[in-house]
Amino acid sequence: MYAQNATKYKLLKLLRVTSYANTKALSLADAKLHLNILDTSFDDLISAYITSAHQFLYNETSILVDGTAVGYLKTLDDFVIDVRDVSTVVIKYYDANNDLQVWDSSNYIITDNIVEITGTAPTLYDRDLPVQVTITTTTQTNPMVVQALRMLVSDLFESRQTAEAGSFKELSRTTAYQLSLISKRIEV
Image (cartoon, rainbow, N blue to C red; front, side, top):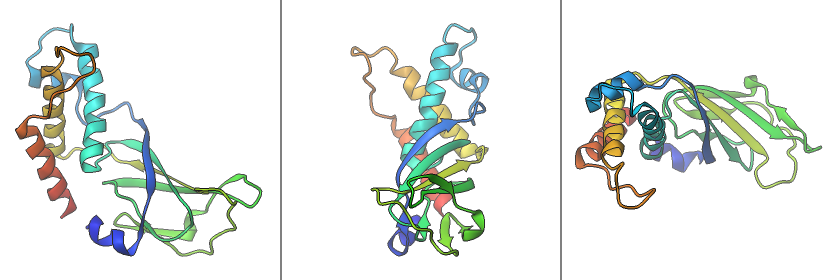
């Protein structure tokens, strides 16, 4: 779906995740159950892995679970947001005086992650990327996504005692396959 629209519409550039909500699709209790951990000795480590798994999931599949991301554009033209389950979109721009302004939502329509500009574009300040788009997403409860998160946490947990600090082995084949299934299934 997104590949087809990318040729017709601009793609939102430089999208970076700025925050996640405190509620994650995978809870600490669920991750510990999957790992068969009965005590609290690894809670901090597993919690960090859950956060990493959410970021990894976004990087690999464009599924941002209950988070906020910001992207930038050169002009206010129609564009595609390559993130699943978008909840809200807020467009801001730097006006002729270089002041950041919120563009009224009546000036654009969002349909299937495509943002179509319906209003007259304001005068933008002369800078590289004067348009800022902030998106928020919903909590993901898809069982395939939750299972992928479990598998990612498990892969991270298994490679916790590597010889080099900060090194990470490749994902297991089953985790990579689960991520590919999610990408294909949600795009359809």
